[in-house]
Structure formats: C-alpha cells, structure tokens
Length: 298
Ligand code: HH2
Image: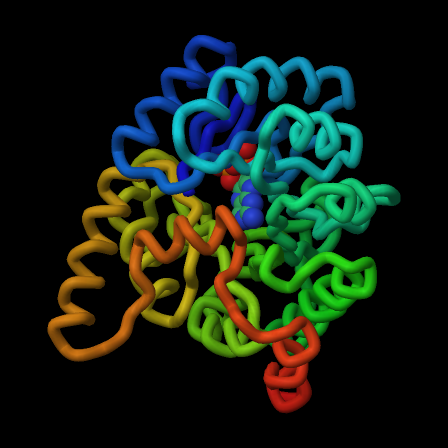
C-alpha cells in the first residue's frame, strides 16, 4: 500500500506532494514501483497535529482522487470524517482507512451503505496528545479487545467480515516498548480472523531504535520492520518507499517458498485489500475461530 499524503505537515513527507499535480505524479510513481493499493490522505496524524476542517480535507483529497481512480489499482482514502468517506466512495474509492476505527458518528453507516473495504486502526487518545504518556495495563490485550469490539460493531451493522482489515496502529499512543510488543505479536492479531495492515514506514519508533532522527533516513529500518511484520503474518504493508519495500518482500517471499513455507504473497496482499479479505468462512465462524479470550488474558 503506497502512501500519498496531500498535506503540508506530514511527519514523513509533509509538503512534498501538497498540490494536485505533485500528488497525482506521486501516485503514478508508486503504481509504477509496484504498489498494489494507494492510500490517499489529506490530514496529518503525526503526534501533536491538529485536525483539518472538513472543507479543507475535501479540497485536498477529492481532486486528486478523481485523477487517480483510473490508475488501475484500488484507492484507499485515509480519513475519519464520514462526509469525506461518502464523497470518496461516490468518487470510486475502494476502501476507507480510518485511524479512528469508524468511531465518529455516521462513519459505520457510510461504510455500510457501500461495498468498500475498511481498515480499523487502534489509537490511544487523539493525535494532538497521544504520545504524551501512553499507558496500558497490557498493550496486546487492550489492542486486541478494541479491534475485536470495533469489528463486531461492523458485523452487527451487516458489513461482511471479508471487507474488514485490522491495524494495531504503530506509533499511535504507544511507547517504543508497546510498539515492539505489538510487532512481535502480530500473529496473535491475525488470529482474530481478519487481514492485518501495518504502518511502520519511516515512523519515529524506528528512529528510537536506530538513532535516525530524519524520517527520510529510515528506509533500512522501515524495510526491516515490514519484513518482521509480514513474517509474523501481516498481509498489507503501508509504505512510503514502495519499490524498495516490494523488492525486500519479494526476496523474503521467494526464500520462504524455497523453504517450503506458505508465506503471504505480495499479490495476495493486493487481492485481499481490493476485496479486503479472501477468507471463506462466515462472519460468525471467523469470530468463533478467533482466539481473543486466551489472547486478551495473556
Ligand atoms: N499511519 C499514518 C497514517 N495513516 N493508517 C493506518 N491504517 N496505519 C498507520 O500506521 C497509519 C495510517 C501516519 O503516516 P503518514 O501518513 O506518513 O503521516 P501523517 O499522518 O503525518 O500524514
């Protein structure tokens, strides 16, 4: 999943693609580098950021979306605003990526009225203050419980399990230790029965390990984190550096196949987000087979 930020202030590439022409060129570049999905965002969620107005987000996102829906890959729109969700879906977006996990009033209804995929992400607090002092009793249990509860809300509203992906929300109200615990335990999140999306690319948690304070100097650590995540069962990798991430995943995949493992394939990731999951079980079976109770009490 290649990231297209139409923002002046994103932590990773703020201002680089802050007009229609540059954002569209960026999207074309990411597709040519092998992105299976594009994720278009008009509001930064970096720690300390303030929300943008509805009008401003609309003005940033929709003109670019109009131009990139025909590039041949599914387009996801990264938003928490139900009005933007409705408009994006009407303009041909295939998926909504909501860092607020459809908790805003009207957000679930916007998805229910469509056949789009959705990514539900965990976040403690809101971007403005989320990194001030994140506290958990047990980060894995709390993230699992939250994601399962959100998924169940969607199922109750008639949204098919196949349309739902889950994301533990790396860097969203988490210390380095919390992030590392979640990275190690991705397979436990996968066991809930939904595809898992990870957004580790260029994040400060990587700088916390390597000492790289410039987000754009975190390519090596982003790739390493993506490999760990996929090796632990993640299906969708949200990345700024698509060509390099894809190459690394292809090598990992080839080696995993050579060793006789049935690893997740890069193209499976694409298919799984276009239709978000290729699970064949019914919604109920997906939930019954999940292991939240043991996992939550760990
Ligand atoms: N991270 C960012 C934005 N959206 N969505 C999901 N599902 N998961 C993530 O980890 C995630 C996300 C932050 O990255 P970026 O878009 O590069 O920065 P900014 O929010 O500053 O625009």
